[in-house]
Image (cartoon, rainbow, N blue to C red):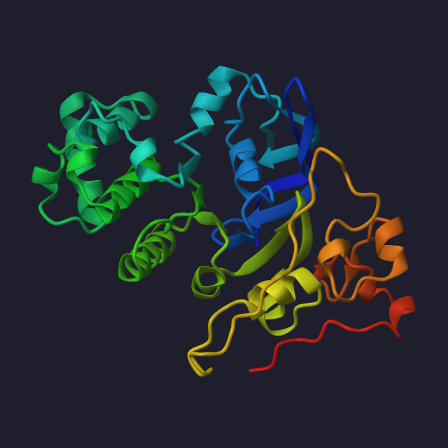
Length: 336
């Protein structure tokens, strides 16, 4: 497959008067043209910060890319000036943000907001841009798109607002769509509709997608490959099958065990990962997950884990996968 996005050793910090938070640490991943990559992990692990860095949307006064490279279609994003960024944002890369209400301008109709992007990026006249906006609203399956164009965000339901945000992200038919928690705060039925819509549009347009989520049900339905993030790092990466059927990191296994299963007794308690993530203003000496890990060894507290290859597509940052830890408790795969 042809490479589209290549992120190497990305490190991001946030500074305040009191402390410096190392939000993302030495993160590397890639996205091929036309594929879907999921980045999963609990809140605060660095997923959204990583996504916003690709769009160069970090807050200028506090957020900073300290190290690393973000190559998009052979061009370095971290060194682009504002004029170059305008071309990439919205045109080559689109983004669906977590909260559709805060992503939309409450003082403009949704039709005008969609049309505005076409006028900026494609140079469309107002009439042509509005016609295209109506077409896009129809594509995201909103009934009576002409009438919808005249509505303000507060006049639409949560599901309709999310569809409008998707339409705005797709106005220029981008090569890459970043969907940051696209189903947050939506009920289960609407979530399924939004995911089916994204998958259909992805296949129709041939674009790549990075989906940011903590919902492994979304991942199972939607993704080709999965990166698992914890405390600002990618701790495991692999194909969808490798992550779901052969997880090797204790954190990945904990996430999978916490998924409700329909064939289990409804009174059975869900598994939980005890403890809390570390304070990223005080970097741990060893593995960031060791304090919460029931399989932790002495080496885990003293040394940061290396990355161990399980296959050409499956890598894990955990001392348990080192051959020298053969006598240690193993992280067993989930069986189905």
